[in-house]
Amino acid sequence: MEIQPSWRAILIWIYEKNFLPIFLTAFSAYVISDLLLWAGNIGMEVGIIMKYGSVMLVGITLILLSLRKKLMKYYILNSYIHLKHFLGWKRIPYEEIEDVKIEAPPIAGILKVGNIIIVTPRGDYRLEGLSNPEKVFEEIVRRKIELEGRLFRRP
Image (cartoon, rainbow, N blue to C red; front, side, top):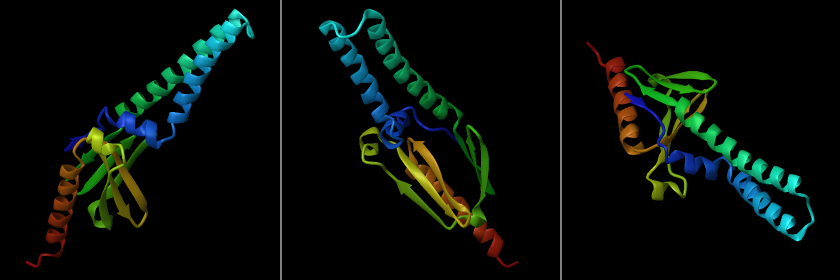
């Protein structure tokens, strides 16, 4: 089962990963450049640099968030969960999973997107931006129980 984050997750990442200050700073620079240009306090060149700089700041942020979404994939396989990210991948065997939780940020209810946190002795792993986290949660729990049943079943 292959899972990829939803496009709606980008809006949550703007909220969660503190990209909102970048957008507000860029918007402020854009508006302030107009006001300063209108008041005659800055030259035309500086105003244009401020405008294009703020637009580029927002553009680069959106490109990075889109790239993050594109490069994240999760695979729920028979014996382990495979997390593929930008910098590499991680494999989580079902035997190591201690707990699985569904996390929904405040804005996630509106966007119908959530995260799953997998707790292991090595640390916590997050499956972010899932459009149907309940279904993925049930699949992980079902496979873990199925695997444990095979491990502990006596012949």
